[in-house]
Amino acid sequence: MRVLAVEDDPRIAADLAAALGETGFRVESCGDGEAAWFLGDTEDYDLVVLDLGLPRLDGLTVLKRWRANGREMPVIVLTARSTWTERVEGIDAGADDYLPKPFRMEELVARARALIRRAAGRGSAVLSAGPIALDTNHMSVRRQGRPVRTTALEYRLLAYLMLNRDRVVPPTELLEHLYGDDDLHEINALEAVVARLRRKLGPGVIGTRRGFGYFLDCTGGAA
Ligand code: CA
Image 1: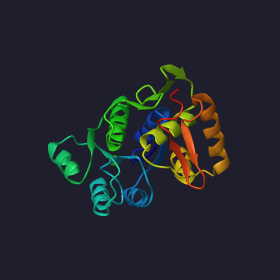
Image 2 (image 1 turned 135 degrees about the horizontal axis):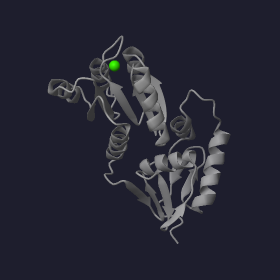
Image 3 (image 1 turned 90 degrees about the vertical axis):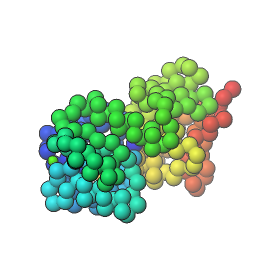
Image 4 (image 1 turned 180 degrees about the horizontal axis):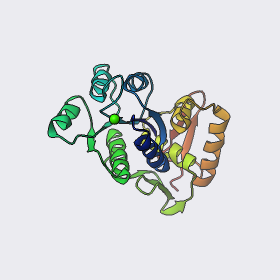
């Protein structure tokens, strides 16, 4: 899951990056409104955490411009002033959730997970497909009820495929969501992660459509 964290206070920005990173998100940080607007307008994020008080362009304007341009990613708004007018303005501008400062990182992380699940059209913390169950609260994977140990990277890859199980996901998109596109990672690296995950999950769970990408085979491996 790829998250954009927009916050100009370096201390809070560092805490955000750490908390979301530990949760298994791939975090990109940005400290001003203008840059945030550009990133959100041109890149695909699964979630944005957006501070309202930002240099160069305020958070509300950034959010309004994204929505006006049809950018529909889930957005959690942060603000120092917990006044109801600001909350209403944030929601009117297209925020999906709202958190007044100071807040606990645990609460932010819980809300981030809930928003991503809601955006994927699933309300439950446990995603399942065939014999595989993935618990997004505990970041754990089970196959036919038995725990499967995964690395953070393998977990992220499986979670992304499960959230997008109605389609074939191109390798470039997976790479972007796993690493962010500022890193130089090759398709070979992705193939290696998929191969390791396949060994752990057993046959028939992750399918390949040659020339197109990977998909979750919900029926495979059920026996
Ligand atoms: Ca601020």
